[in-house]
Image 1 (cartoon, helix red, strand yellow):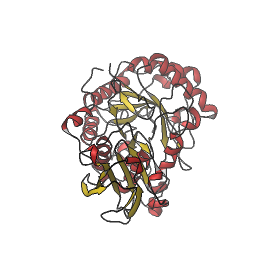
Image 2 (tube, one colour):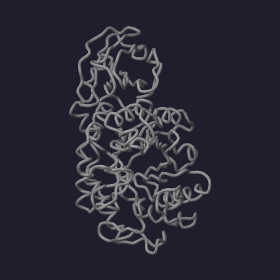
Image 3 (tube, one colour):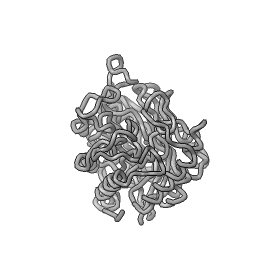
Image 4 (cartoon, one colour):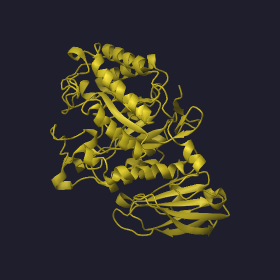
Amino acid sequence: MKRLVISDNRRFLTWEAGKPFFWLADTAWELFHRPSFEEADHYLENRRQKGFTVVQAVVLAEFDGLVTPNAYGERPLINNDPLKPNEAYFHHVDRLIHLAAQKGLFIGLVPTWGDKIELLGHGKGPLIFEPKNARAYGEWLGNRYRDTWNIIWINGGDRQGGGDNRAIWEAIAHGIKSADQNHLMTFHPLGGNGGHSSSEWFHQAPWLDFNLAQSGHERKHLGNDQIIARDYILLPTKPCLDGEPRYEDHPVNWKPQELGWFDDYDARQAAYWAVFAGAFGHTYGCHPVWQFFCQSYAPISFARRNWRQALDLPGACQMRHLRNLIESRPMLSRVPDQSILLEEKTGPEHRRACRGEGYILVYLPQGGTVTVTLESLCAAALQAWWYDPRTGDAIDGGCLPGVDRLEFTAPWAGPCSDWVLVIDSAEADFSPPGTLPDFEREATKPEPNQQS
């Protein structure tokens, strides 16, 4: 079985043979609970076509997932007992995981949402786990999916990892790992108060292969790059990413009439800030989609569109441009480097810079003029580009001398006018940003239809 591993430099995910893997995920938390097989097929195909590589979904769903049956009338557990899984329910889970595999998609598989362990004032529960049955449930899941290639384990479920919860989360992790050494594992923490990361509780845990943050949905321009920057410097070195940022079409701080809604710009800003701060990938989310909202269900947190309509909102279509940009340059050499910027800006204008072998990338969330230092390229000549994160188009910025610093001005500026400045060493002879030579494009495709 081919599988994902941590890269040699401990910053990224790769296939075992060393081919880089870019995590571009969508949240479909209710995937196993609400949609039918045909509806799930429609969803997964839409995400495949948009360039996503991972789908995050929960086995024991949050919204009455133990009591309200799935689309086929099946509940996950008999008498809500973690030691008595309902085979008919898990047959549906198996089919969807296999369907995702056929489409080259990984499932970021969450064993249970946190309301089965801690209510926190939201979620319906009931509370069903203690350490002993949690370990047994984890071991059962690990045995069931250890030979299924497209699994990435996401322990946790929007809850803290400490206090009385810790022993249960540890038990689930150790149960899974006792049966399944084939797949990577992380932890999905709660949001709020500027966001949290798995590192706060489990960075030293041997079962935690990479850190996952939730920067959350509290406010526009929340600096999720700061969460990534904190995780990036921790020892031992582990890859990190934002696994739940502000969702497109989510009400800002759950107050739509006062604060409005997050849109595609907000989704882009979170994505580029995080990745340029050192994240190995990014998770996008759309508020009606994760809950598969339609007229059959009451809206959760002011959902306002049918999930099918929301599938093609602009932000979902634009995420592939981030993946294309990162894959068009050497991925495994990329490091964050704010010293490239001669002037720091804060708030909505905050800029993020990174560099890799033969290139520099600078994200300007509101365009404008930027002066950058170029010593890291050590190049006699440079090629500049302006990359449009809305369209994926690259505007030729011209050939330039390899001097120590240069000033650049984006094609236009203002709110929501984000741009990426790309500066290449001319000797590298890269394709325009966002495009790959055919042989490289083939190499970045998902592994084809492996047997589950």
